Length: 155
Image (cartoon, rainbow, N blue to C red):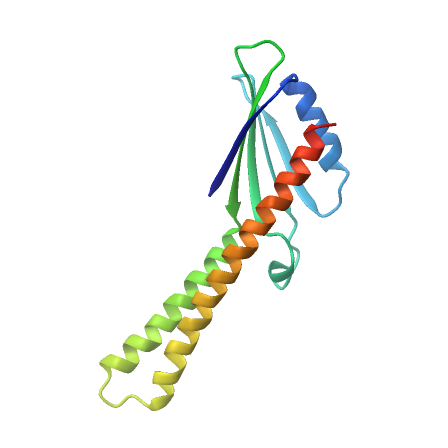
């Protein structure tokens, strides 16, 4: 999870209406906004993943944000956190565990075939390579969200 904090010289309600009007009309985003009792406004957004194969092509980051009023008049503190979508964590974790499982079975079994010695490390390597690729994509997608959010709040 990565965090991004900054301050704006605007009222939290004005910032929240800018965000809601800009993201509410974009099709393909899931966007929710809640007003807390502590005068903080929280929002959550992510791209909608309709089918499992969309996970590989779309930006799969969940953005959680909080807009709160500071002690200074007409100033907003913005706290945004970026987290990886749960499906990616599940795919990578299950792939690595499956590869380790095959490898453990191949090593601990007396009559294991050569096939298990090939399949275990292959699945494990795919899991590690997928993890590396997803981390690079994660960093790139965070930058896309940061530019999009900074363009929206600058309106």
